[in-house]
Length: 275
Image (cartoon, rainbow, N blue to C red; front, side):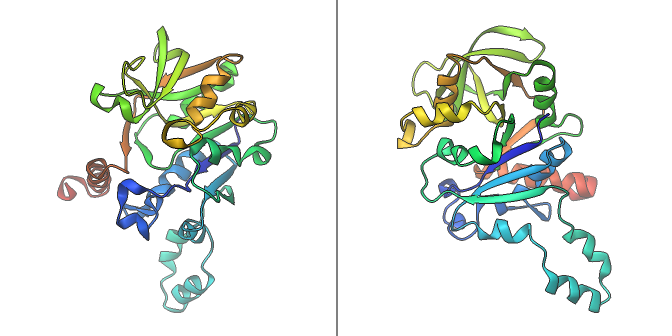
């Protein structure tokens, strides 16, 4: 049922400056692959067939990475290095691109996907949040919930109190069952009195009526169009649920978490010697 996904990748990546002045944060190397490749892999493994990447003028490296390099392929063949061609294989998914001309926020970026989405429910994956798990695919968990209930659903994780002002935080009255919560409110980066310690963590399954909500809201925190504000408005007429994701999550825009993820991936590839 969920075959389309949006990956918003147009931001400046200011937390990664000065490196991100020239290298998009989505292209930061992790285990010999760019970070965004782990996001695309998660989507493909969850059954996504079409991806729309929201990029900006400075993100051409992303577009180039998901294009064929005929010259390089020919060179490898001439040099009898055909075994390296496997590393150049593109993911089995249709990837489309559109540009966000001005950095107006995540909500504005998502609004650019209205025609791509049409009348279909769709996924959103934020490319600076990478989950590491050998078992559950976080996006697939959300899709399975949607298949059963046909309700909007958002990935959640518990966050330490000192970090709550950096996330969208949801209000819940009780745990529905297992790791599932019904969402009653959502606040973007609360500076005081956060409604819970459950943070929105970069994976969403939403119905297309979110676009009418995006059209109605005004710029919020940071003078940007916030997706959380549109979800808050949507809650007045459409229920949404939060699923607490058990997999370990890494925010690669934070240097310490990026380094930790790189170390873990390297250890997984090379074992104790790598560690």
